[in-house]
Length: 489
Image (cartoon, rainbow, N blue to C red; front, side):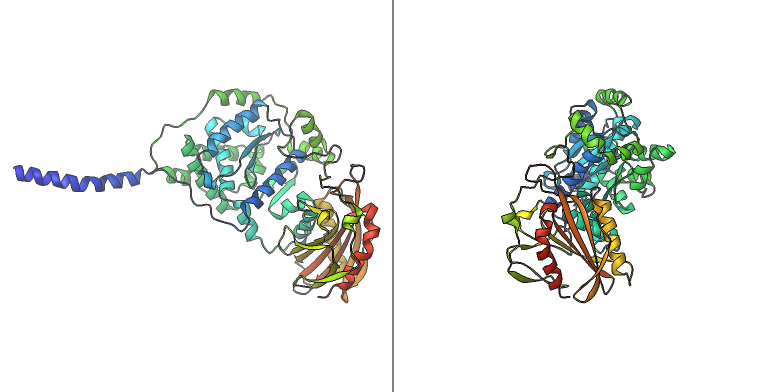
């Protein structure tokens, strides 16, 4: 009997650790996946997000950080992002847009915006946290950067011409290249169904770690789907990956049991307050953006994007350091630069710099460029076009239209002219906008741009955009024309 007891005891000692390991594995806490390493660096993603966030403050009515709604969203956002390991986290920040429609979006690098309509529509804090965790997951997984990699060969000329505008300082053009677009009172980001499924899965982990039921995320999307026209933009920007609730319930089935939070006194108060906030429709916001209303009202209300330098009366003028004519004057001596698809001569005292977009080059004086904006010099962009036999006239017209679309201040100031570049038919047109460098009096000054577009074989084109303030453009023109004459494909 004693021998059987001793044997049983030894068996328990052997078996119990195995059972314990199995049980522990079954109830292990979920961990966030490795987000990967896209080619776009963290610094580039953060810069892109800051550019887009600054544009939100121009394009949309934003509540000041002192508002009850913003303070609450900041507290809730902090509770969520603290679940992310520091080595994979981002400098998240949280803001509220005074818009009636349901929407929320998080930009690369961490800026997040939640519409008042979203706060008012959520049934409880867990649902609101679910929306924010889903958006936070897009940032965590770096979906915007990964989408840009998938679209490395852009087939639409308008998008690539927008990149030229971005390189010379047109923020909207740069953002459009990375899938961040403004229109009809909304901000749109490109997400696939795969991205959405991943954002649900990662958002569910963030919610669980923060003490919320992950199913609340699916509940809010289901609520939107039943409300018809109240949330179409949000649903179109966030394509349903299918069986959202089932996928989340299946994922969390093996997670440890937890006492979830659903509501708080703070949510109840802000939910009630949100119904009384003056909010605007998407159409009203789009109209206000065109007139510059929101930039002015946000400044008046104290809603200024952190770190954003605002030039009074000139929302599109950048705070570039002023440069004297002596600093930017092109040398009479030229040297040759090999750009791969072509060679071009440049003033000896001007530098060759790679632009923000792949396939782009800036040739400019060092003091004529700052923070990605070009006030003096030339932006050269290799583009992919859809039409195999596009004419020089059509290529130039499309590029000019895209530049004007991405820079609301830019206007064509002359007719398209036929010229030749290295014996190849090309188009030439003059444009005008506001310079990214203030004038001698510190006020915004006009800028003159000269666009030259050259169709090439294999559905390619080369765009040259010569840039200088209007007061100095004619002094720069001889050097610009000499550069065009020097091109050898």
